[in-house]
Image (cartoon, rainbow, N blue to C red; front, side):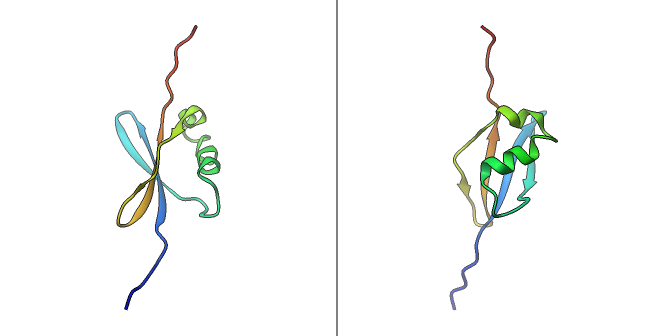
Length: 72
């Protein structure tokens, strides 16, 4: 019998050359809302971009990547 279940979402940031996996606070929230939710703990998320999601056997992984800029 085929069993279908939704994949959970995980969110990944890299800090100090270490990957940190963040749980999904609310599955109804958009990815942008989740990013804003975690920005209080991880200030680098305020300017981070969201990479295309990667689907694995267990989850959909969203990676937040730092956006680096230069002063003009």
